[in-house]
Length: 227
Image 1: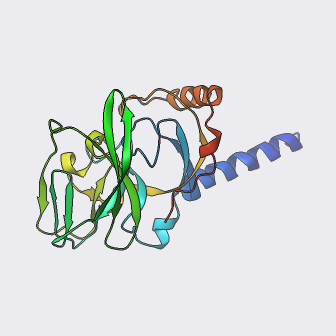
Image 2 (image 1 turned 180 degrees about the vertical axis):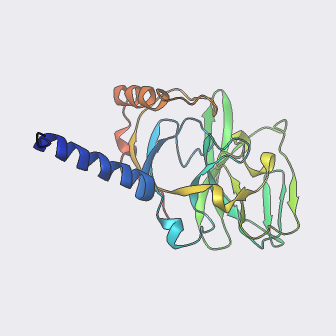
């Protein structure tokens, strides 16, 4: 029996290492929609730490990738706003945690798809500050929700693009076991068209990356997204 060629042994080792890293440490994802604007843009390619929540618990303000509870075959990305034990209420654009309204600081106006969007800085109870976007229109429907107490092992997640995000206001709380990991850096970015959240197949990621390579956004490469 002939010995395995050196090049084949080295290739097998590389494949094993890559599979180990992907399964337990870090995984790459791309942002297909605008639900996390202005923090994350369509065409951002991010790295997600899959080990961190095996060693610690999710924290308020973390941007997490998770299996969508309504269809675990689809990955979503949102920000943790409500923690286990919180009493939480959302009335229009206002969020109340344990009876206290989250402060909003107006930052400015941008135009997107022919509509004005108001950009605010929202401050969470643990001091995390982040930007959110709201349409400047009295006709935008906003869902009110109320949780007397978020149970253990569950989180309320919201998109930073509050008027264009399918999040806990529409499908409920996020179970702890659905969380894949914490997003921590944009490793590449390109100006590409958005996808529907269900438009997922084996070729989608390659197509998006190819389009991003043709239209790179160098100013976003290496942008940290941890707090």
